[in-house]
Figure (tube, rainbow, N blue to C red):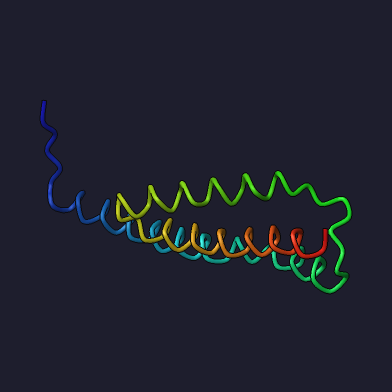
Length: 100
C-alpha cells in the first residue's frame, strides 16, 4: 500500500521536521551541561563520597551504544548528544577512579 502526500503537505511536514531537528540538536547539546556541577563538585572537593559509580558507568555504556546507533543511522543530533554525554559521564567516572 502506498500513501500520497501532495507537495504542500510535504513542505509543511519537512518544515516541521527541520524545526524539531534543530530543537533536538539544541536540547541534545545543552542537556549534558547539567552534569557539570557534579564534575565540579567531585574535582574541587576531591571527594566521591556517596557517588554511585556503577550508575555513571551504565550511563557511559548506554551513551556509547547510543553513539554507535546514531553513527550507523547518521543521526547528527544524537551523535552530538551521545558524544557530549560520553565526555561528561567519563569525567565523573575518572574522578571516582582518581579520588576513590
